[in-house]
Amino acid sequence: MNDSVRTTTTISSTKALVLRFQLSAILHLLLLFTPIAMPAQPQQHMSRAESHALRRGLLRRLGLENVPVQTGPSLDIPQHVWDIYDDENDVDWVRHYYPKEIIENNTGFLLSYNLSVAARNAHNEVVIKAILKLRLRRNNKTRSSGNCSIYVYDDEMNDDRLLLESRSVDNLTDWIDVDVSTAFSRRIDRISFFVELPENVEMDETESSSLSSLPYARAQSAPLIVFSDLSEPSSVRRKRSAQPGNSERKSRKKGRKHHNYEVESNLCRKTDLYVDFDELGWQDWIMAPKGYDAFQCQGSCPNPMPAQLNASNHAIIQSLLHSLKPDKWVPPPCCVPTETSPLSILYMDVDKVIVIKEYADMRVESCGCR
Image 1 (tube, rainbow, N blue to C red):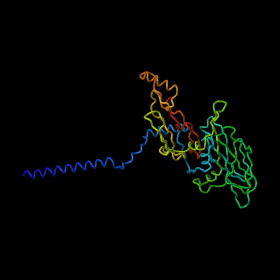
Image 2 (cartoon, one colour):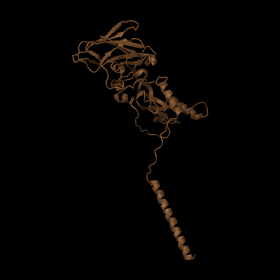
Image 3 (cartoon, rainbow, N blue to C red):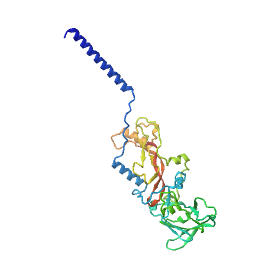
Image 4 (cartoon, rainbow, N blue to C red):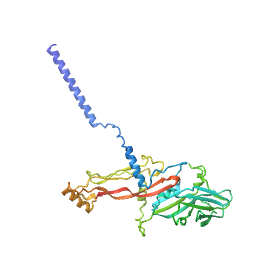
């Protein structure tokens, strides 16, 4: 091969290398500045042990030993229960019972309610109000007339009964609400009411419900709703704080909200933490909310502490002592909740008892160094 051919080959190889280098550089720049559709990061799930520990902890917090076992036909939550849940009633417990037994005779119905199962956690509890809801209808086309009289049996061992209320049924409405609070002057595990009706009036039976079979259909027309509060250990009951506004009250019940936090380094602050009841497998008995923002406190409490850390005087002194003797017995202050708020949970207990309970200290509202 002569020199001219060798020179031509060398020049061609050099041009090819330069071209490959240019293409490589262009491709590299494209990779740097062109958006790339990256696969979504896999969602972090709890391990089986973590999920089990969380379930046990939440059950203890809810005052339950085990998940309530649901038996029999499925149950739709009636609208009047949702209305109570969305209302601003500032009570600790609301329990909704269906009668366990309904006995019919010539003059009316005997309704018996088993209160023992749901009342197993009713220590230091005071009944504020009890409502017997009745859905009645005419059994023929004649105009309803007369009175509906509700009696309570004073003692199950005899036939003594006390008249609680007598109400005209000349104009029947969808529901009749009867205040039976006086029947709960003492703690009881069972209670029975006799509903005396005129000849042309009877108890309604639900038509469009998952509990369409008797006796459930008739039982849904006679729920008993008991409102109660936890009594204080002292003789003087603690005065409740002012009634929260509608938006604040509803925030106790709703699920996930979006929050934007201004994060400054790793200082003590409130961060997101969402508890998903569906992920725990509790969607069959916790009706609302499906989950909630619990939040958490994370970050350090350095010395000196910035004003926004909401530190107590004790925490400031403790931080100072720790900085002077970090290897001694004085630990640094901790980032902890300084303000919390309650959460109302609507769940299905055993025996089709619907419960609404407000649990204190379920959400973190603010954090600080303590």
